[in-house]
Length: 449
Image 1 (cartoon, rainbow, N blue to C red):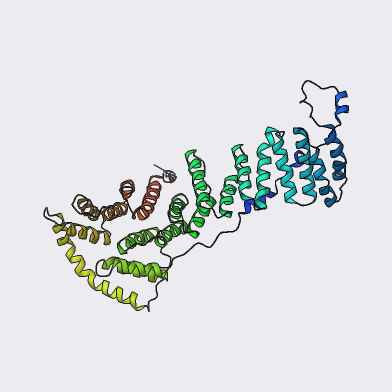
Image 2: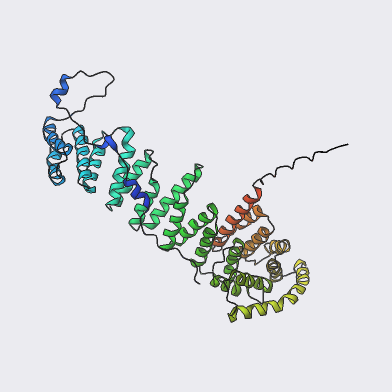
């Protein structure tokens, strides 16, 4: 089977390029340092912060290079002076000032590695003001990411997020650090946890996160995660695209037999996401013109109307002719089949056959009756009977009951019923939504007596 597939999405998110534009302003420029002796002579006001503790040797090394930076010195010459400044560091304040200077040199030289060195040195000094810590950590992480040092980038961006930084979608960037290292499962687990945390907090979940999760999981054959993200995509961001992708993924990542394929394609039909001729062909084969003639003719006619089935295709035309020729007799047999299925002595095979027949003719109430009876009989295929009971309830508009029924299914069919349950929930929510009130017409004014 060939269905619509996701294109590869190995490219980096544009969020990182935007993050690179983070402006630090004066907070990240070189620090002007007073000589310790001169500082001693100045009176310190009570409200002032404690004076910085710069060592004499460091000031003597720092000041000439800082002056060159201020005067627009040659970047190569400025970079050559960095080792001497680092060697002169004795105190935490020295380290903070050196880091600021080195970052400025990195900016002038357009050298990300030097910028990283400076930012990381400032953070290591312990002197970055608390109000700026999140921003500096994010900047360090963004610089590391753009140098493909993904483990380090992850640590810094996570630290920024933990400190309350929310600009530029830091959690998406953290997930991307995993993906960039081909640690797809770990990145998806991180993304899933971030999504669950937002949901638990009542916060909006980013559609881009969910779509990225779907694409990464599917393109890297992470079947369970692809299915989980696709269900989330369809349930939280319903559209023809999301539902079509979710159903296609369920089909493409399974080894379903025709009973399962039929029920999954029934969902595609109900959601309006039958995408191509292959899906219609699979539906025709799975439904079987001999077993479900009315359903087969309806599906073929819908495929013709959508322009997705070729009227000259002999398989399609022969299937339709065979199905159409059986409908009258099949309908005539329905009452007798129903009576036999309701009998106390009815076999499981008869009861299931009646449920299937009535479901195929869109008679949900009778189908529900027979599938419910089958569930109490020995030897019943519970996942199959529950799935079709849920479909019968869904078709009657019993959305809450259908969702509960789908939730009871275990095993491989959960891939199908998880999608059905999401669809039932959506339909139930739409049904419960208050209708827009229609303004009352103005009263007709009576004239005369």
